[in-house]
Length: 427
Image 1 (tube, rainbow, N blue to C red):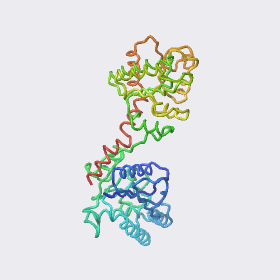
Image 2 (tube, rainbow, N blue to C red):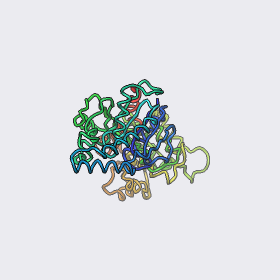
Image 3 (tube, rainbow, N blue to C red):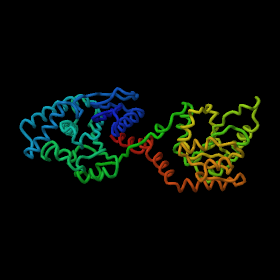
Image 4 (tube, rainbow, N blue to C red):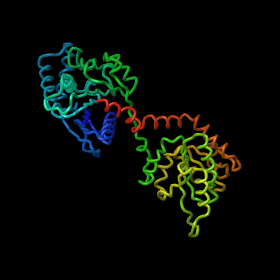
């Protein structure tokens, strides 16, 4: 299947629609589709495997010929309330030129997706050309086409019909009229329920011809970078989507009390939480060679409790460097520090700067750093009670709930599987 994605601009131009088009292109290509992105501005940035770029300068609203037509249409309406004569000829000539070029570029496409181009007023000759080509596709395949019928989709991020002040681009009997009605042979996709409601109400679009496909987010791209081995582990094990990720920056030495963290992790797992306990687990530089009995004890605890998936000694993957810590703090949901003894407590300051909630033992240096800013437990507390405290916090803190909801519902992987893949499979 060949999918053509059309917009005024493409990455690396900065913009919401440009970002969405790039993500759509990459996801479709990764799933075996042949993808062609057609645009005027941008391109030539980081190449996406399997994505072909096709630049047509006249698709830009800033192209001199396009600006002339847009200005003449607006001026004509302002003077007479209607359009015609020379303005019509200028518009028609440009529209014919665009239709001819796009017909050639889109000839082998099974699906054509126009992002905003059919519902926004920035380039009415392009909108007209797309209407013409969609009508031609509805009337049957062009000569030499490889598909039985080309499917057209208008992807609605914004909507001129819903915005005051857009009538200056032409009266509704002229080219701008296309912005206020739905093309009968085009399917519509809106990025939100609001845009869907506006499209059906303002364009006269039947509800069953307008689906909602939300935009997505690559949450990992917003995190500080980590060395590849750790970043790959985080992605493979889906840390961001877990119910609760606890970070414990510590060497495997008895005073760090990692066994308490393992017990709390077991209690969280048994309570039904999908938990990860990340221990940086740096080697003790003061220990003589040979097997470390404390580390062996911890690994035996993990094995006995069946926590191989839940407890991650990160040094088993790669030694954690200082440069990895910002990424770990950003990906974690809470800092967990059950130390039996600390001289100061540097991770608490790191957590504060990273805006990471802290759960720690009530040792004097730790309490002095946090004052009222953390959740403390006694070393004599039952791990079950500490686990319940963590669960109560995670179920009641709004910011935590929003983070998890966004990552789970709007990750690009989820958007593709739930929305994009079925949409293009039905083409």
